[in-house]
Length: 160
Image 1 (cartoon, rainbow, N blue to C red):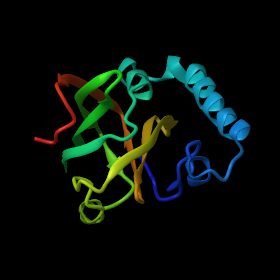
Image 2 (tube, rainbow, N blue to C red):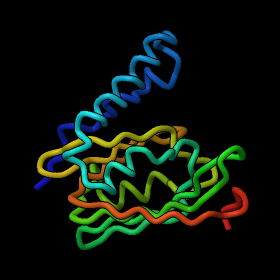
Image 3 (spheres, rainbow, N blue to C red):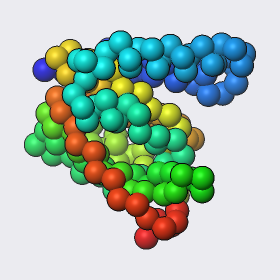
């Protein structure tokens, strides 16, 4: 159903965008274009995919993940001092990744040294795709038919 091999890069929040290559005006234009895109496609996104597009994963830590039988689930610790912290558990059905599970494990996503940089949601084939970039490097693209989002507040940014 999904072929992610042809699209392996972020569409909006590229390395040029987050590394400072673009001017401030250009970088702000990218944010506006992405928001306008989400507004344009919101009727074609499921309610949960639309919610995912508005979930702030920036600086999030991956706590754990599983992938099998077409289902990808991961839990991320997200938030900041201003809005508070929470664990967001995202479960994608009919999921396909842009890499093998062995390659995903090699990214060491649950390491303290790895954080979510930026993410974007888009239409892809007959479903959606969630593209996520990480610090210090790497991208994960998850094509999916449906997604569920569960959020649980936590008191601080501790992993355990």
